[in-house]
Length: 420
Image 1 (cartoon, rainbow, N blue to C red):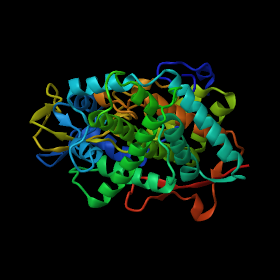
Image 2: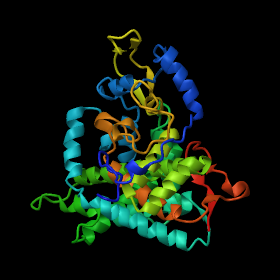
Image 3: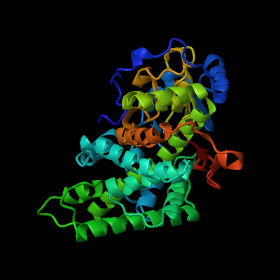
Image 4: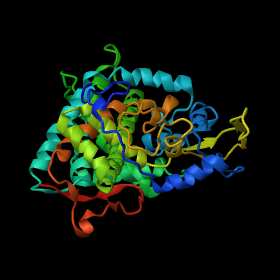
């Protein structure tokens, strides 16, 4: 797992850091700091609430029976092609059901997967950057491109039209993980149909010509069936739900994370300097810490949404106690939690050596990202060859400005960079 910035593993280079860390306060933090101080759980009963303090964010995440994911039914419906299908881990709030599926899913993952994904990322990123002649769309042309290579080589899903595939994933992710309520939309159903067909084709191809080496997650899922039991629709529904869940949770999210990391590095020369030094040192652990510390200042979103299933009092034994009524939509503000000075030391300093516990990039509790280490390996090894180039900078003019997917306001599509 050496390619990933593994939590709890210390880098040999951390002790050599300079004495004065870079300081920066991201714009939303001015609002969050005010809320944490004056109104830590702002709430309009039966409408919305925001949770800003680290302790309260952890409490909400620790009660999936009370604060449920709003996309559960919709994700299962899309998995089933308009009917109720098999839910995936992120959409399961019942802890026993979640853990039962988690056990089945984890059987097909191996420790070596992190190294394999890192090697795929490093090889493809190096090829793309080598062929770019000093100018590159670092999002669609690099970060997203490598994630799709991983879908093919590691997950086992062949993708012919990468543009359509990416757009479908962006639309689906924007639909499922956006602000509730989440209601069916015909346009999203069409994108889900496209993705489901791609995955079903991959399952059929694997059954017709099984891989003997077990190099892909899909081949392991198929080969893990009981030898005396014929494949059935229920099993294929499960495999589809797992692969779809992994793809929807990986490609758009890592593209978003990679774009935000890149923006922060280009925006803050001090951040970029530390990341470049880590890449040049060959210390992948330190490089990962630099990248995910940059992401703390511009995470993929302010936090996920939850729905309150029954009346509940957050922080019940404190002065800030707040009753949340059934039906209230709750923004669990992980960005604010990562800057809570009561729990996070020196929150406005860029400190790659800070403990992994300070971060909430991959969630908390039962919905902690099952592919976290794979996602880390992809980002570290994709950024590394880029950071080794001289004079990395935004492209001049409009090309150097971030462009997003139309109608999916948070998802980045293009940002050109130049280097020597």
